[in-house]
Length: 346
Ligand code: GYE
Image 1 (cartoon, rainbow, N blue to C red):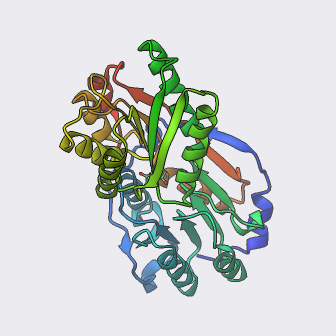
Image 2 (tube, helix red, strand yellow; image 1 turned 30 degrees about the vertical axis):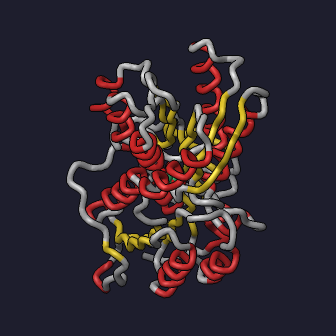
């Protein structure tokens, strides 16, 4: 595959606008996925295949697993791609190494789901010098020069956090607790990851509108169930009157629920503590149906087909939207979850 010159790509990507794309059924992965090549070399028989290096964050959550699967089932040889997949185990240094290895292997496109927002300038300059377009997916980067990437596609994390805060206000109001003093704790995601930064900020915007809400503590649960449980255990030891725990992903919520039960307390719609999560993975629906989790705020991980569409447009010499937000919903125990669950793609 002939390498595209970055300046041409930059010209094609000039349309800088906010766009929403659907999170509907067209994003469902193909029925018979072919595995991507784990951290491998580009084989000499790559022929006319488009080689894509994907620097993935890790495998910390159900969301992440669904995201990896979405890329592996989209970027297959059948569909004209050679995927080089790298799992960075939640470490930025590993992602930087992976990007350098993609440059060395002279891939056609580099896709990055950046673990944190800062510290990417140098390696993206290297990709630019090599003439390899970079597409960001899922989380964002803070860059002095936005020309260092062609396009970004992901969730609107600030909006997700605000939706969560608005949901909590309505929920408390409906319970007749609208003016009660409400003690809140937050189990944050990986500090500096845009999903953490945005969700914390969004919820904070709504918190600021409620004088009777008090944020007792915020600590990172690294987006994992194990760390979420650990953090909740320590919150429960420090504070004896927690009303709400905001978990910045569903897996942390599952850990928090275990910690609450182990401490002899109850949670969910009929319990002592209101528990909410983000992502809306299938296990979150099961947890709501079981009466443990109160609500989950959706974040769609099926970015493989979206990145495929961006690459196809670039290959055809068309312009692409620079920033593409995915539409997202939320789910709580007032809904018919038994009917919704079988329709969920992740
Ligand atoms: O919420 C979490 C994952 O960046 C949106 O990362 C993603 C987040 C997602 O580990 O479960």
